[in-house]
Image (cartoon, rainbow, N blue to C red; front, side, top):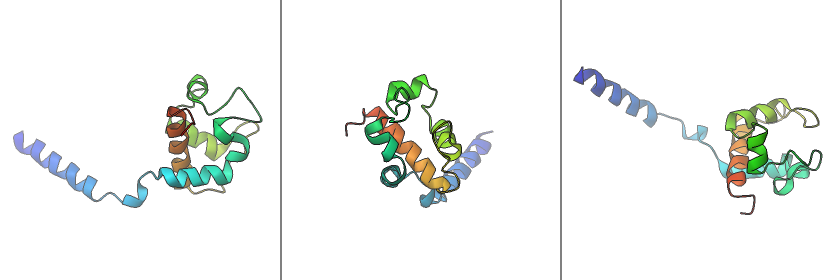
Length: 111
């Protein structure tokens, strides 16, 4: 049993060490993607089309949009007045912008 756990641990370490660094989240890229594609409607975390659906932490939480998965889905597929960006942005860009939005919402969009 001890050898099983040791082997499992070594395998996990090996898998982690071979992870492609290009797959890591890039908040700076997310900021650039946000500026180029989202800021016209969501500058400062606001929403010029639907003012009650901001990107502020409490609004994201209240609208069940407070996870990378839910934001990624929304950006990819669009909804209501928001267009779908799945055909325009790479998956990594969408994931980066989702992480950027969550990071900014946690900081109150002030920083």
